[in-house]
Image 1 (cartoon, rainbow, N blue to C red):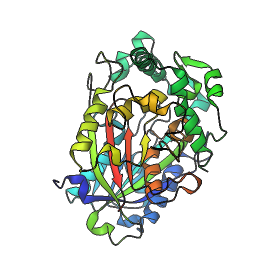
Image 2 (image 1 turned 60 degrees about the vertical axis):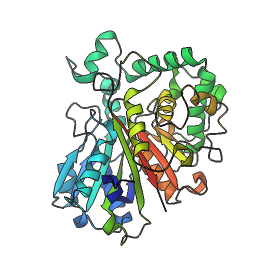
Image 3 (image 1 turned 180 degrees about the vertical axis):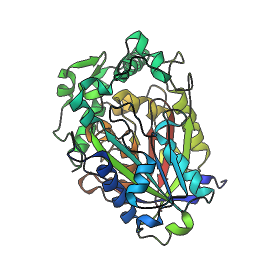
Image 4 (image 1 turned 90 degrees about the vertical axis):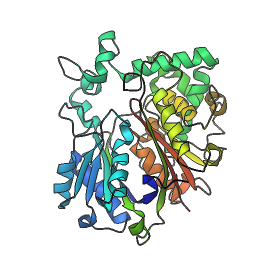
Length: 395
């Protein structure tokens, strides 16, 4: 197997702030809580960090989407980095900061890169419930939102509801199957002390919840939070001297689709960009989807989990909801446990970075009551616009 860039890198530490809805802490405080925890977990000091990346770059539009930039994090940590990088919504989307960090380490620019994701959307919604809509407080919209807002799709729920409806129509499934993703996430969140929603729900509760954008219900939608997640990516030569058994970045995958944003290609039952990411992922490893023993699958909306799982070949086309139905095969003791920390639906919206944190938690055997027995290979995928996937393993 070719020695791709990611094979020179290891994840050596992770950290996460307390999650709030809302949090009493300022976003920079949440960032430092997560960053310092990750650095200490890796057996390092702040001055050992020579690179910082986050997703996305700091936003000045409000809404709490990205309130802390890499420069602020560097100054707050009191360090002077060689390299700073920010991911964007385009390109590989949510994974872009991780992929940038991998390239910085593999190229020799950095030895240890801190990657963080900070959100303060719960605080923003205290000021205005419109703050997290695609329009925000802007008189005009641009970028990918310009393709949806003029048609009344002012929330991502409106757009992703089209995908759910199309999937149901083509494959003959419905909310009775889709709802098990939410039920499973809440069941797992009950075992996660840092999850937002921990009260179990039943499939009947799911079906009785209010409709948000047909056919997506309340429990199909992820939840706004305040918090930060961080990880340290180190060169493999230094990782062997750090305290944690290093987590190998076995493979990465990224892709675009549609208009460069991964949407509106005419087929609403697939994510073309995610399929590109899946194809790339498996081309860079000797492992196969059958080897995966836990999966942290993006769930900004429950339909994402279906489409992403098929895109990275954990299930065949049209087979995801048949596998998910009943909730047992995706449970902690099932054939393929998914979103073991509650995912975004119940754990909180870290825009996928919570999924990477949870994958590492499982691979290091730190899951406690939600630990998957013998976890050694985890698939992680993030994004609803740009697409990125990771295959993480522990020896």
